[in-house]
Image (cartoon, rainbow, N blue to C red; front, side, top):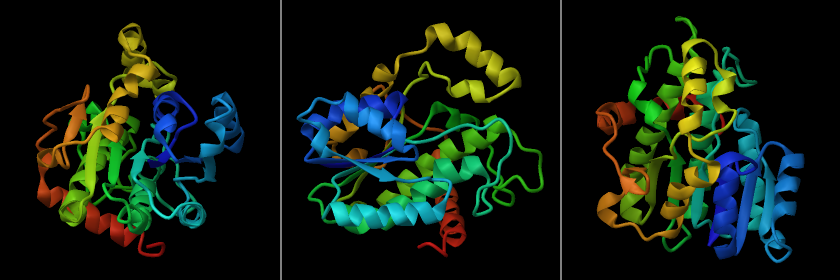
Length: 277
């Protein structure tokens, strides 16, 4: 297996990488922080370390994404599994160097661009997979396609996050629409509510609820199980494009199943990223 994974230096990403790398010929570590990537690689056993290849990428910077793809193309001839794992929730509205709202850029646009640019390498695999880490938070999504960047309405960190987690599922289904008949397997998943510092980047009611839920949260190792399952298991073609929870298909929200919404999201994303695609 040749694996590429975003956000592998901490949390469920780290646990996913550690579980999969023994089965890998190469594992591309797509991360922003070189020190964290180096530390991660050093935690691997000496026989596994040569398989791990650090690829610098900042999903909030589309030039960085295109540069990362160029580096990947020099390292491997194909990719078998791409796991779009990185993500974040941000308390205050921030705008990226490309003038995108940060939550939207990191959780959706960066992965949309990365996946599309890596599609030629994925298509060279015998059974390529794209795995998108979403969340049950998608059920609270209320996307306004006339204001995805929060330029008109007040920014809400949780609403912004819920929206992009919905977009992860819509993107998954769009990939099946476009590439499923060419052999691409694409899946979205809810990892579970993982105990981490994730919710501490928010404020108000959401932060309070996160604190109250902490005793009931699962470990990153438990949270990585569904990603690992999808990467290693041959999934029935009838489940292509499905949303998974606890390694089993789970019905997502009605919005997540809307072809109209996913087609609109693809069109908007492609238009926003035309400069880099």
